[in-house]
Length: 379
Image 1: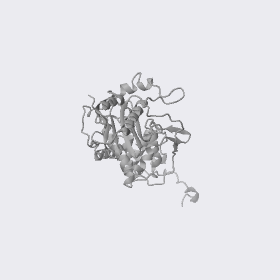
Image 2: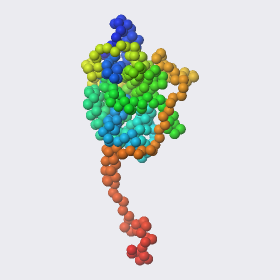
Image 3: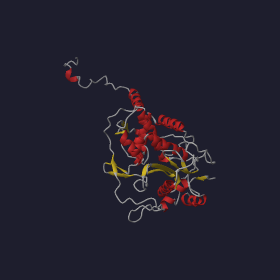
Image 4: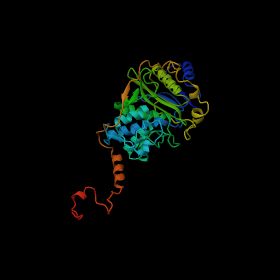
């Protein structure tokens, strides 16, 4: 059974009409809140278990930000692509094992390109191994009070044990924006330039919704289309968590409508993210969106994304067409001058120590020795 609490500082009758217009009865979980105060403006099925897909990368970023704060590494530290991370499926950058980039560039690729290989590399470099990094993710989730979440990997590729809720994601978003405001620009990047490649942000709000400044999209068949959108107007930042839509356009339209309505509200009421009481009967089993998101005749396949002129087909009146080229940020390999992350350095040292030191075959002289020997083979 779906639960929808609609909280607005408007007359009850008008609120009911707006609720029907903005949030359809069959919608997935969502929550709208004020980032600074944590005040909840609207929520629906906020405690329902859901697969986060690439929204997982927000926790990967948060753990990494905490590691920087603890002095474990810097934005200039090297992030090395391992064989394991290079083998992750798309979306990915496709760099070969052994490739090295700065953490700064890795974060941009992970957040904007949503590169699974780079997210895994960040997890391995910061945590030493993905299981060790997942332990850190879950420790941070417990510390933040994310009681409905569990993480198993750094990139959000589907795992039945990698799950969260809209309410928990709200806690995570607020922690990132409040504790680490210096990293907010990462989430507002419109696109990347890597050599000849041009990669636009998957977040259709950035550059199209007034005040949009982040944050992250996610999709796997089991999750449907997820989006966390943030926007700032007149010094007030709101965030909308939208899960389980059936098209990329749908998640952007719902987030835009929620944010637009939120900016019309007069802040009032004591309800906060931490004050929400768990509700609903879908807290123990995650909803599986495979049939709707990836089955035959899916909504995304039957809903054109652009018209014949290449313009996005979006129903929300709050999302404008981008009439200019996206502002691209250049990323590349190399340039790492900071300290190697301690956990990864320890793993690398162990792996190196476990490799036997090669010795020359007894029946052959060592290289360079022959020229220094006499005719009788003695030194």
